[in-house]
Image (cartoon, rainbow, N blue to C red; front, side):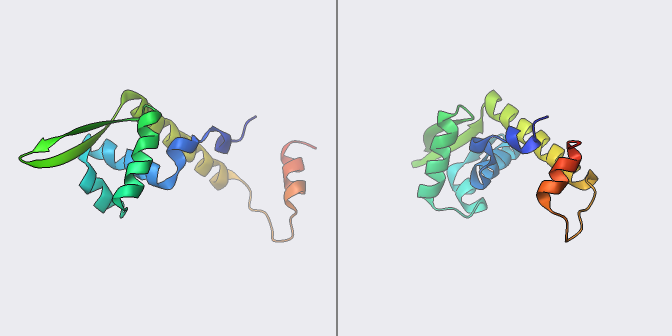
Length: 120
C-alpha cells in the first residue's frame, strides 16, 4: 500500500502555488495585484509561481486593460481545478491517517513501529 504522501503533487503542494490555486478557485478569476497582496508576495515571486502553474496547464493567464491600466487576470483551468481537488483529497487522507493512528510513546522506535504495522 502506498503512503498518501506519495500522491501529493509537487507542483500543487508547494505553499505559494497551493495558495494561488485556492484563492483563484474562490474567486473564479483573480487579478494579479490582488493575488500578490493576498499572499504577501513580490511581483517577481508571484510571476515565477504563475509560470510554473501555467506550464503545468493548471492556470490560464490573460493580459488586458482596464481603462488605461494594464491588468493580468488568472483563472483555473479544468486541470487546475482537478489538481486542487486531488491535492485536498490526499491531504484529508493524510489527516485521517494521523488522527486514526495509535499514539506512539516517547521511547518507541520509528522502525519498530513501521515493522509492527506491516506485520513484521
